[in-house]
Length: 216
View 1 (cartoon, helix red, strand yellow):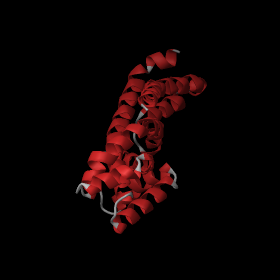
View 2 (cartoon, helix red, strand yellow; view 1 turned 90 degrees about the vertical axis):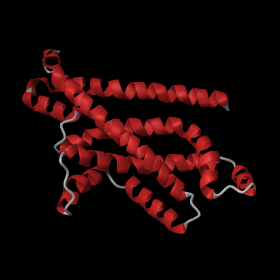
View 3 (spheres, helix red, strand yellow; view 1 turned 180 degrees about the horizontal axis):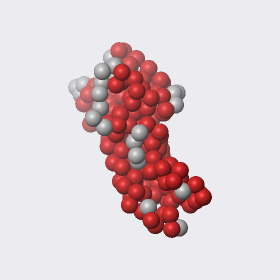
View 4 (tube, helix red, strand yellow; view 1 turned 45 degrees about the vertical axis):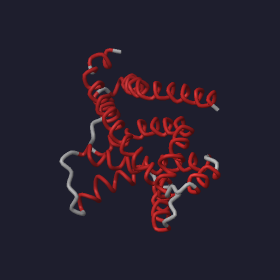
């Protein structure tokens, strides 16, 4: 345990950076994913087509490709980042948004069609029906799966360590290389700090799921 105690400042710095990446990427992904889900059920064919292509491509490609594109391809195309964290946030948020879009779309599909038809019959347009009738009900039912997606986002942030971002996994790898005789202890310490993020989210998902079930 000495290697963990001696390097607690590094673990803590990595924990805070992972937390920062997860929170910022999660917020962006939630907004982008909801917009993509709205486009997926939009009456405009172009929006439906764009959203479908985006979601299918991102959901069926490895996260590493998204990181490679954000960290290496974009700078070669002239998009420069002051810090690698920005590229990591772009990769994580755009990738996670595809999964959030599918979760929200499933929630939208669970809302009875009659409610949308009733809203349109009293003169509401598509935006009003979606924002006032459909999405509030849809988001309530998909909160547990959305939290699970955010848990996956926290774990996926470890990929940033391979792209010059010193988050929790990145520091763990450095410590493992510097303490070759205590690799298991170092990795256990890294796993512990990841659990500090994911376990509370898991408990929150279970609590929300129970409350939603009772409300039904």
